[in-house]
Image 1 (cartoon, rainbow, N blue to C red):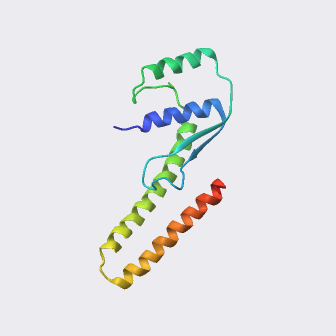
Image 2: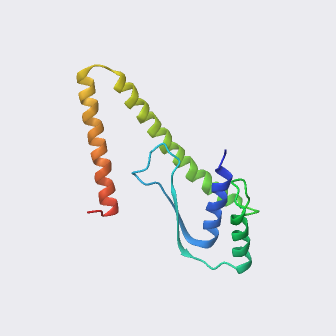
Image 3: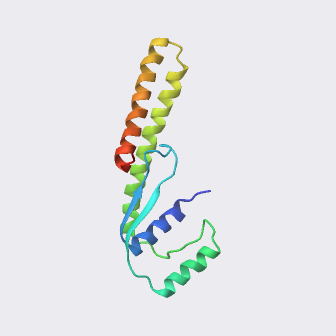
Length: 137
């Protein structure tokens, strides 16, 4: 099932009702997975009519539901840019995973040792970056 229109609709809703909207992909998330978070900062006001309309639509939720009737072209261009960045990120990581799989199939001990050192360093750097970013102690 294609969730693209639904995601765009949700993003546009955030765009309308928050001063700032961020799309965040945690470094601990599967790099090729579709998981990301939408963060809205500084909520704007929303008329009661629109809030009631949103709640009615959510009560009868379906993925193909249309929350916003007219999404401006300018917004769609921004979404295209963000999605293209996410696709490039996912593609890069799919290539990395393919290299890992192919290298793992090589039975040469020296190659595997070098590769395992590289992977362990990559994992260590990713964890260190996560700890630094989240200020987790």
